[in-house]
Length: 69
Image (cartoon, one colour):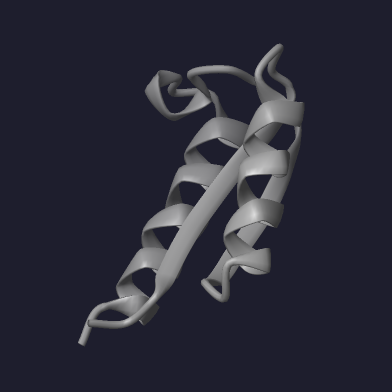
């Protein structure tokens, strides 16, 4: 089993700091973390259909696909 995680936060998410702290703690525990803050987006953006949200969602799916065997 690989110790990998994808942690994506959104700039305008009230939980952003907690998500980024979680990613840092994973790194400190030896987990490889692919992390990114999606600028200009809010919590739940993956459910939106505007251009920025769709582009961010596609980036997330590519990140996950790269990690799958």
